[in-house]
Image (cartoon, rainbow, N blue to C red; front, side):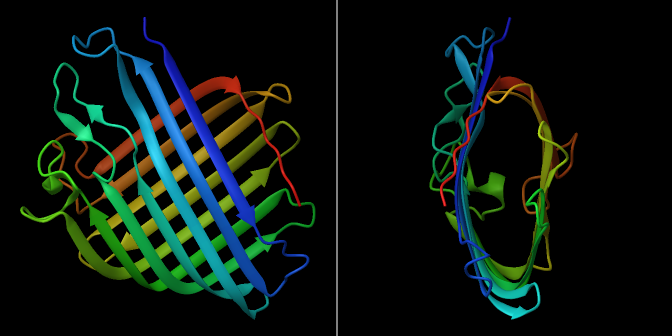
Length: 243
């Protein structure tokens, strides 16, 4: 008796490594929105299960072989208000929370000749991280590790990010992203895995898992500092590319 709809849109601009082997540049904009019907909610007929706007940028200059001196930027927030069921209490909204990370370090980039397998590993010994919450209550800044009376928290630490893309054949592919940041007092991290099974050119079955750990957030009695999400979906996909 519940209907779920999920949309995941990604736009990536990448420098051609064959033409510019001494440089790296990748910029990705992603917006993910999941909506499901809420028959048990007396105020709204729907609820938001996913709402993520994320921008990732990587620039680099070759150091040696497949290693590059690099700088990375990540920004993420959600766009819509999300409420607790049967109340008008917001759980999250635009820039509540929001997060910005800027880092410098080195990146290893490698791709197979056929392009079916790629690996990018960024190690950043210097990383600046800012969390923000523009709301005073509902949600409270304290939910995201921000002190009372403040709307932002600034940290300097280290960051590691690894991305793997593997295409097993024309129908099955896997992508994985591991992100870890620490200011040497707390650790936060995300590990996402997506398995795509193409039924036809435009029909796809997708299995997605997301494991998250954030020691800076409020502790949950059941999961402590962990969160886990899994989604099995069937729908339409469309890809286009230009050179």
